[in-house]
Length: 403
Image 1 (cartoon, one colour):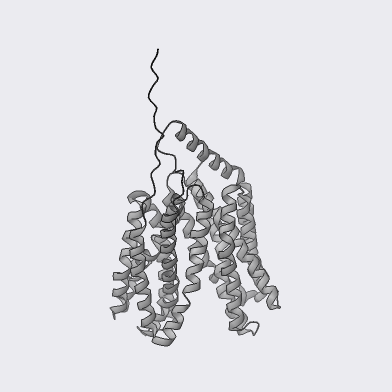
Image 2 (cartoon, helix red, strand yellow):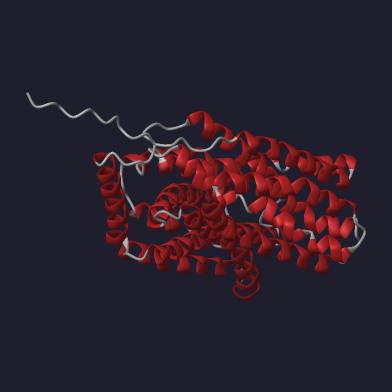
């Protein structure tokens, strides 16, 4: 079984799911401009997409740990496209709310099972595997708005139906790969049993480390606030502080987004090589000085270049944290994936809009200073995350003496 090939398959599955989330952000402005929605309605639909997903995602992770159901990934991807693909055909607000809520449930169905299977196909290289899987989310969020911006001016709002196509194709691919995915799980179980029977140390810890997982989740939540804040305020900073035109500022955001995707990919690989905790602490420690230089410089070139270390400081440890969470909860990998890939990110998205109120009340630089302070908190929390517990070999009994 070629695990690396399946890791990239899981990445594409993640792309096909998160394309739908990314597209929503780009579709709503078209609906507002045509008088179909107002800003309050948009806020309600965003709530339906994110909050409902974050609430039910741990439940599906918990169920996934008890019952191996790889087909749930296909179901989740199909459901995630429902809200987007039907949006252009609906005119009743509550029908839109329901469709987008179904899409949010689909996202909640996919991520725990996707994270669990990405862990299995990664083999020993958990950091690399989760990095490949996580970067699929970055790509999906980036491709979704591009597709929406190309499709809707061409076909109108009913063109949203096209979003169902990539989801359906990926769902079919995953269904055909179910036997192989089950073999990965079987191989992992056999390795675990053989290691335990031989008294080896390769078996994962039998007990879940909830206190360590709690510290990791807290770090992820604060990091998510930072990530959402940077995506929101990077282009505004270039426009409002460095006085760049809107188009040039948007290009800086694209440059930052690409850097974030690369950081997610390479962060997992470096974690396998240099250690999970070391990579998390190194990257998070770089955020505050990098953002300080970014805020203090008056050079557009230097500010643009500083987006690279900022992207690595924010996204470099992300996939590593997801993989480390699975190490902290070795008996509940699906639940761990549901929380680290879903709940922690959604909570950050709920808190992040408060930064907009800070910017409105006290200025853009004040919001950036709040992000700077959040970066300092993340650094402290990162150093509080312990290393995973080592599995202990069973005691070796003394040989019996012959009478």
